[in-house]
Length: 117
Image (cartoon, rainbow, N blue to C red):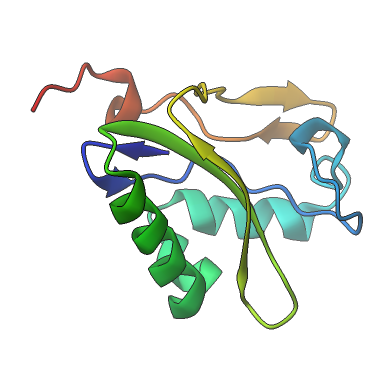
């Protein structure tokens, strides 16, 4: 998510399929995937994604020039960002509990507090 020019992590879904939806991904069954997501959500998004992909996110943010937007993307084996969509109509869906435990971003003041320029 991009709010007020800042990029925020919302969730990280890892799957062997190219068509990844969070709730059909391997996240619930793979503790190592949930650990990677936890690092991603703990403000270590640039380190998890890598410099090349993070710079691509910044370029997309700058090109959009929106105060609020979401970016849906993946990474290929070389660390290149694959853009699926970027727009101002994405919603913030937070934490879900599964039999394997909680997955996804917990509610955060980073995106639950009203923003104003």
